[in-house]
Image (tube, rainbow, N blue to C red; front, side, top):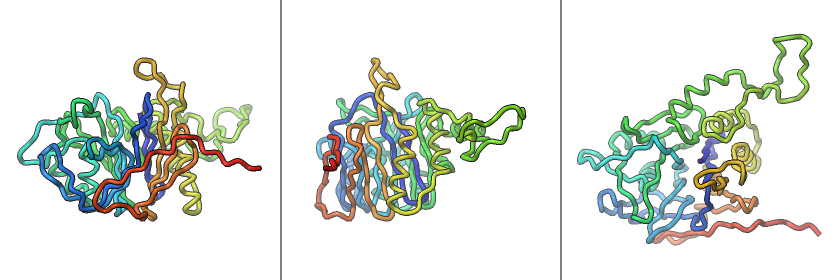
Length: 320
């Protein structure tokens, strides 16, 4: 399971939660004008904008989990099991597979407004990358500095939702999460006023958050992340980045707290933050809390994919 957020107008990112770690995951830079052959139509698609993101490379093909392009448009795919539905090809549509969707959108669009226009003619098709890499049921969060939307391909077709909470988790459908927020109108960072009995004393700070859900279900993580995101404050770029990871930490999964398939432990494999202004990706992994930063402003090969292994070993600063 996963959680993604947009913080303020300039920072996007996510926790990637799984019951297994991903040793093949890398930071990938795909340069603009890179020729990417789409399996959905067997044509080379020119990529208009360079991308930086998290993913894996299979047969020289980038499979992005999340990414941001040089214009600051961000996109992430989150697990959506039991609800995602992909379709057969339609001749009157732009057919795109789920694993092509991120480079298709980020390689073609510079804003959410452009994304909304292009999505009017998109069909997500049921074509796996290979026998070894089957399709994953996903829905997507897409953000720029002005807007945030959620895209779901379900039995009802392609659904596009404006996302006022700038948050996405997993099941069920996004319209459930929107409706569910009505149950938490009394949650506040301020101290609660005693309206029940004058003999009852408020004995701790944080009484305004009584009722804030605390489980690791996708429904509860959505509410908690949306609340924490909406009330968080920070004053400058470095504080903003640090605050972003604190927000993600509020819904992170610790090994042992959630038993998933075959009784395996689900954990937050990595957390990342994309800085819109500096076109930089910051990340940390479950095994290494120190932030690593890679920027699209760095020098990289403009003709091929550039990748960086994740820093997985705990980096500790020793004071002597």
